[in-house]
Image (cartoon, rainbow, N blue to C red):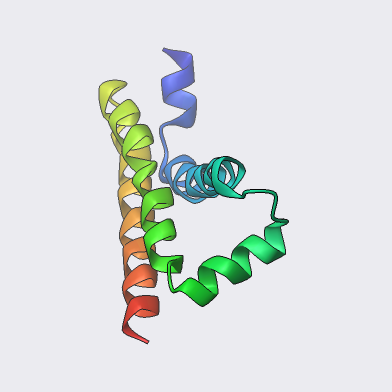
Amino acid sequence: MQFRQRFNNVLTGVLAGLILPVIAFLVFFLLTRNGLSMPDYYMKILDAGNITSIMSVAIFANIIIFLLFNRLDMLRALKGVLGITIVWAFVVFGIKLF
């Protein structure tokens, strides 16, 4: 019970919503890099125009933390995850638009 009270705040949700997509991208990178270094891999996906698709897959990982916070009834942290996911969506949309 103490854990939920301590971490049930918007900042926890925002940090989780920022960190989890980065971790998801790193896992995606490790699974699909085919021997490329991180800068080479980034240039490859940038040249192929797949950056928004990969960002969307990474952001999809926020659903896991969203459902976990919902299950634990940590609604304030849930608001943070939802808010940062909406920000991520606008970033992806902005990149896709331009």
